[in-house]
Image (cartoon, rainbow, N blue to C red; front, side, top):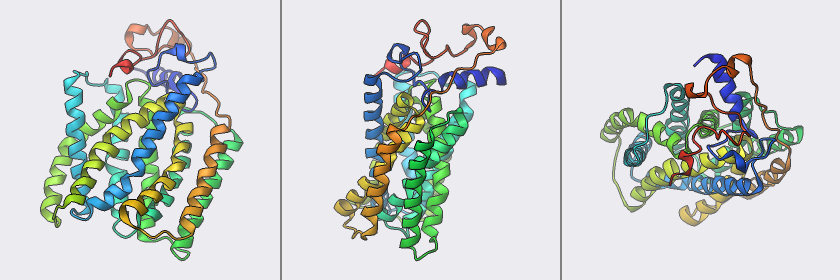
Amino acid sequence: MTAQDSATEDSAIAVSGGPTGGRDDTARGRDNAPSPSAARSGTVLAMLGVAAFSLTFPGTAWALTGLGPWSVTTCRVVLAALIAGGALAALRVPVPDRRHWPGLLVVAAGVVVGFPLLTTLALQTSTTAHAAVVVGLLPLTTAALSAVRTGVRPSRTFWAAALAGAAVVIAFALQQSGGAPTAGDLYLFAALPVCAAGYAEGGRLAGHMPGWQVIGWALVGCLPLAVAGAVLAVSAEDVHLGGRAVAGLLWLAVGSQFVGMVVWYRGMATIGVTRASQLQLAQPLLTLVWSVLLLGEKLTPAAPIAAVAVLVCIGVTQRARVPAARTVRTPAADRVPEAAGRVPEAGDPNHPPAGANQDNRP
């Protein structure tokens, strides 16, 4: 595939800030916007992903009661990769095309290894409540990277609301740390662009294959390295497994690393990366609830205030106009036969996008 063909393909799948996600084009209007029913289902799926992610920090805190940070990170990848590999093998899913592997590598580096490791290191010194509010910056980071990747340009109102949420998070972090970021904050801030890149690229790839296959292949690709890392980490770190440590590790592997990512990528593929990313503004508030109920943490007055202020930004960003990316067709692209793998133009009912049939599989 030439660079020109690749650019045409990316333009064809960039819909409302994200890809088509393999949905039948009859569910979309001529302006490439999802139909109301598709938008509702996509929003529900994305919200289920956010709910799963809101338990990630409490699950990590539980896992750290019996494992070191490197053991938690590598073991969760091994377990999740075995589940994903089993599902891919059972359904006889073909290996993705070569052109998709660079994107899968970004997903693996971002959401399989980078974000889990950096946040686990942060939670050694930071409370889950504090970390949850800081990670509230993730929607803005994801939206920015998605805009660069897909060429979508959200409205000024959208960016104003997103920046307002970011300002609240930064002010909270500085207020809690006495005016200077802590080591935990530095880990968390470093995790943001890493995870955002994985989200944005995963949302794009979900236009070519079902979302569960995106995270599934990213996990399977990491399995050899994760197994070697787990052996080294478990032998080097202190391990004393208890009920909470096992429960936390299992949730990280099954709920956060695989199931949560499956519904999240499916939701992003339907309503767009930019809009879906703003639903994550609800994640800090949910995690605050779990930190009290599951960990018994005492919240400072600033934590719920900051979380609610950030949550208010969701309504503004969701109502702000996010234009659909236009499909750019070139003479060279028009001459490429569909048998050679050209992605059909979004909105063409006679030619559903790649993954349309696959995406209807259970």
